[in-house]
Image (cartoon, rainbow, N blue to C red; front, side):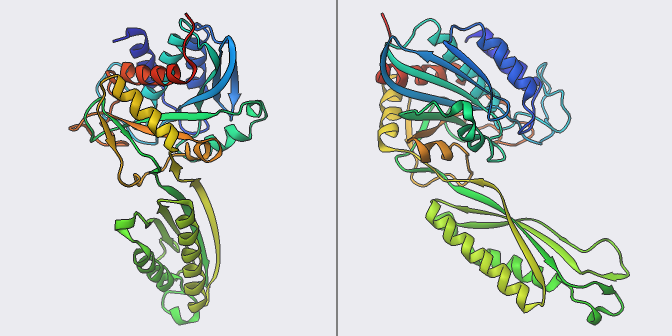
Length: 375
């Protein structure tokens, strides 16, 4: 086990930062990457992102490897020397481990450069909110890069430690958040008929959301928040806010589901004499693996003696890496974090340090197969 990389992960784990706030994280990464012999080191990509570029001696393909930098708003329950020092914020998704893996790839590339082409190592901010990948792609400093293949991994509790989970096709579902604001007319609680309460409409929406779910096809509308009026016992409410998360395995199904949900909000609002406004937020496209990239993951893992588990249907969580696979083609794959470990976003989850070397070895094998290494 590489002690330097473990210490880097622990350092990143100790000071987690939410999406869009990864300034300290970026500085820690820059400090490490400056010790490697990258040909270029770009900072401020997509906000707080960092991009290390390694050039081959000859022209060739361009490969982008990406990891995520942000933490989640979860209070950690770990008693380690490297436990989070930021209250209510922690690396419960294992992004600290992802960063350590890519930093390890940078360290290896500084000693063994590609024979041709170039490797882009992207440390991306803002994954948890779905904004980071889009911001990187829109960044003027990223416009010169046109990767032939994009690759990323995510640690997955519930699978044997060090196993590789992949798919030729959809790997993670599309998702988007809906905010529906309903407006009626408030009145005295003793005279509710003089007002227009949104409460019946909210109840109908909750039932309607459940009716739209097709669980065996991965189509979900999940109520995540609802507020009706204020905590005032003398008032019949006049306003309400309902929030839900939509999930679907493909972009087309997501568009259809979104249309159904908007129609439901419109019809129920009109039936209850309410005005309404809707807003979409935290939008993630489906992450779809290309056959070529999936084949590369499988063959490279096999050559390293790693077990490979194919995904029969996409995971119902979402990843903004879908913006990259949609534009360039590539693959997001999983690396098993162990069977009997807490799930992601659980207060007790901790990325296994043993996975760092496995992730580095697999990424390096894929780079070698496409670009080869100089003697």
